[in-house]
Structures are given as C-alpha cells and as structure tokens.
Image (cartoon, rainbow, N blue to C red):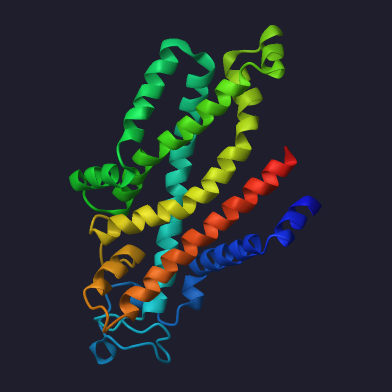
Length: 277
C-alpha cells in the first residue's frame, strides 16, 4: 500500500486519472441523485426550453426537444460503463483461456487457435463491429456482443505471448515433474504471472470500449433513442455546428474525460504492478 501511494503521489497524471475515473463512476452510480432532470433520460419533450445554450438550470444547455444535456450525459455514462464491464467480463475469460491453451499445449492446437485469433485481429475492430451490428438489431445487448467479438483476440495474443515465455521456467518444469495436470499448470502456475498485464490492459480497454461503443452509436448502430448515449448525442448535435455547439461539445468532452481517465489509470497500474514484480 505504501509503495502504491508513493507511485501515485509521485505522478500527478496518475492522481488526475484517479479523479477523472472517480467522477465518471460516481456520476454513473448516483445519476438519479445528481441529475437535475432525471426524467429527461427518456422520451420527454419540452419545446418551451428547446435548444437553449448553457444557462441556469441547464448548465450544459438543452437539446432539440428541450432535454437537459447534463442529465443525459450522466445516464449515458451509466450505459457506457455497463457496456464496458460486460464486454470485458465476457471477452477476457475467452481470450485468456485461448491464450493459455495455445501457449502451453503447442502443436496443432497452438496453430489452429492462433490462426483463428489472427483472422480476427486482421479485421479492423470498428469494421468488424459494424458488420455484426449491420446484421443484428441495433440494441444494447447486440452492441455488447459486437464489441465482445472484436475484443477477445487481444487478450488471447497477450496471454499467449506470456505463456510461451513462462512455460520453460523452472517453476513450470517443477510442477510438471511432480505430476501436476496441464490444467493445474496453466491456471494455478502460469496464469498468476499473467494477471498484472491482464489487469493493466483491462483498465486501458475500458476507455477504448467506451470509445468504440460511442463510435457505433455515432453511426446509428449502437444504443437507440430515446436512451441517452454519448455517441448518438454527438452525432445529433454535429448537424447544427457551430451555432448550437453545446449539443456536440459537452458529450464529446464527456467521452474525452472517460477515455483519458482510464488511460491514465492504466499507466499508473502498469507502474504499480511492475514495481511489485
């Protein structure tokens, strides 16, 4: 704990990342309490206050049907974080299991699993997600599936490279000599040495998942109205730049804060976990 605090205090950017991520997470959790107009997350119309610039009580202005942008951003954070957590909760175990098996077993198993992984990695992530969402109905669940389909190969490749380096280490050979099963060697001996890299990548990827999900919504393939989503809010406001700049600027800044914060936290975790090794 002392080492962790020392590393955080020595790097102001790490502290900034903690603050930004805390703001994003707390905003999502307590959106019902913080949002001045919680009812504006749904299909609400208030033409008496439509398209107003930032002013009290609409500190970030209102959209084209009079909904408070600040309130909708808070609820959009909730959607984005849920999507990111669910995607990683599915993609990480799949990628880790494939990487461990391919790296430890070797032979034709390694060749088959890694060639499948390479096929997925060869397709640009956004293109793959767009292709899947073009076939499926654009819902939040299908959006999660689309992003998951493009995310697991990165963890498979990461764990595969670490496993190949670790499988010739003395502790692995010792476990094999005393009769440990391949499952025990992979998941009890090698996997713990992969955890620092996996945790660091997961933290970084939370921001990128939010960015990819926002990109899909920007193209009309993600979360559908009236559910608030950062990408769709940017897309709707982009038609009215520069006059109604607040429609795009504030949702765009919300995406920037989330992605930047998780990246800074990921860098801090890399330093902390690296110091513990």
